[in-house]
Image 1 (cartoon, rainbow, N blue to C red):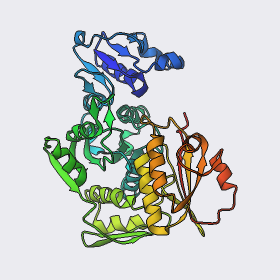
Image 2: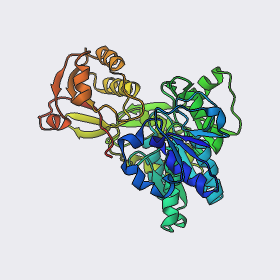
Image 3: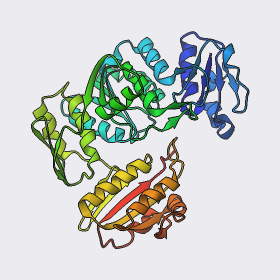
Length: 411
């Protein structure tokens, strides 16, 4: 057996297979993780001595392996079983039907917001465990590691439900949600794409909630999907107010407080509402939403003037464009603080494309460019440059301001 990519949990997967009785397990450290971080040898000393480690530049003959296991976005040109699938198999092997208490959310943008809203609503009546990008890793392997830790602490039975944000697809669960695929970007070195990758995992849910637009794009590829599928249609609403967000859905009013900014909350909340209907009456669900708060996702920092901030490692060109569009639709003009860090996620931001988007709004906004990303953006747009976001906060803010900042996750 060959397991690929230590970065995304190959050693954890190998440990599980070894404990299940598998032997002759090879690990391909495709990105050279061990070469950069030797502390991993100590962290995994219980299992690594039983494995054959192949360095990043090692030559691989895939045909000699009975099974190859890798992340769905791994750039290898062979048939392989994904981490999403094998984690699902291991969960069922170790914990039986525990996955029937799982709710999992995947997509390109809004995963964290959706899981936080689900958690907030459901926690009124249920004991809910949550793991999302506000709390830790969201790889498929992280689902298993969370359950293992709870088992070791003898606290699994303390929870009625387990709520996970998962990247690039879901693992086995009772309710799974694919909230969007804003851009069908290539993965696996261009060998696959995000739409097919995410959709291929939705069969792992007993009931799958999928954005109607995503289904339409998927069907255009000639594929079909079977099972218990619930279409979630964000077009089937009437927006009463963009700020504070207020809309009607299924003849009922859904309303957020003034601390929540952005029409993307409409889509996120539709998924939360539909999933929560399996557990609560609609009146109880809608009663909870107006008091919902979340840090780091298009938050209102102050009201006079309005300062909205989105500090998020997952900000990409499309989500920044949506943020600019939302801000312009409400305030028309103002200041945009844009910048932050590179290397926040697996998909690096395209500064050229981002520069094009920012130029489209230059007649409406004055730009302040911040941090390494802001320094690079000076090649594409005009704007004052500041070293850090703290430099912005130390100033007196005199007009409505939108802050869009990519902040790397602390190790």
